[in-house]
View 1 (cartoon, rainbow, N blue to C red):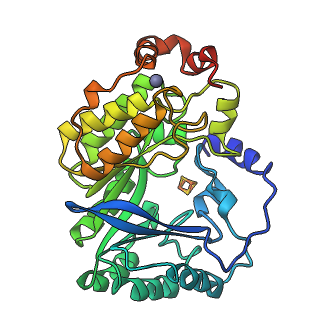
View 2 (view 1 turned 90 degrees about the vertical axis):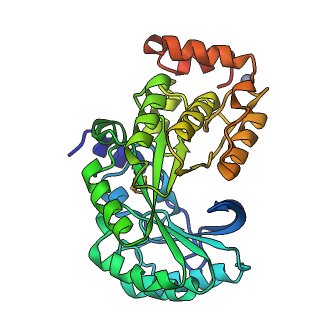
Length: 347
Ligand code: SF4
Ligand SMILES: [Zn+2]
């Protein structure tokens, strides 16, 4: 068992589960996204299930999604009702993202028959459907389920690889699968004309800012040929997590937006694969941030870049805090990230 597992489990015990509706999804909303070369609307549904199986037994160091989970009494019928509730708000957006706070293809979360029903309901309506899953659930049975629907719609499956480095994934994230597990799953998706969206986590615990930039860039280099989309997830501090534990003690700072820009701009030079970056909590202490003077502008720049894929004019962005970021990247082996924020009074 990894050393992080008991730590993750212990912190989860401090969470007192809230009363949740089992017949309403966690959230659903419309947003703008890119589909091939066009900017289109996308509809996102987060279904409430009993949660990620890995989180129940072990858990990832940064993940607080277990707080979205429903009790074990949740039924398949309840989840079906959630789907119908959500689809009432769907207005033909070309991209439909159907997520759980876990894995869509984990039959402990969503039964195979309900997975089939959801596909039948949605495949005729959207041009592209996106799911998310850990690699162990991307089996022959899941692929066989998806294949017939490919005549009607494009399908992409997101896998949270986080990093191509097994050491970091195991000891800083506690992800519970190897790069080879990811590659096996991604290859079988690719061989069946199903898109692979690879999530790259920016700044796992215990990495300096510079190491985090290098780790993301190495990951892009490794996965660029198998991925249809590379989606960067800059760290945000979720409650009841190991990451929050370290952040509260100022042993960790979420990544700088300057780092995200550098990763996007360098990645664009490495690959033509579509790059995406959704920043949760951007500009706040718990999310990726620079300084109050430039957060808004840089976040907007990253959002636009995600949609247009244009990295031009990045080098012309500036703010006084860029010097501090540069200094941190050069000295962080000593300061280890947090001290800079602390000194600037941002925390
Ligand atoms: S990050 Fe993904 S795999 Fe890890 S605990 Fe959260 S939902 Fe499960
Ligand atoms: Zn700034």
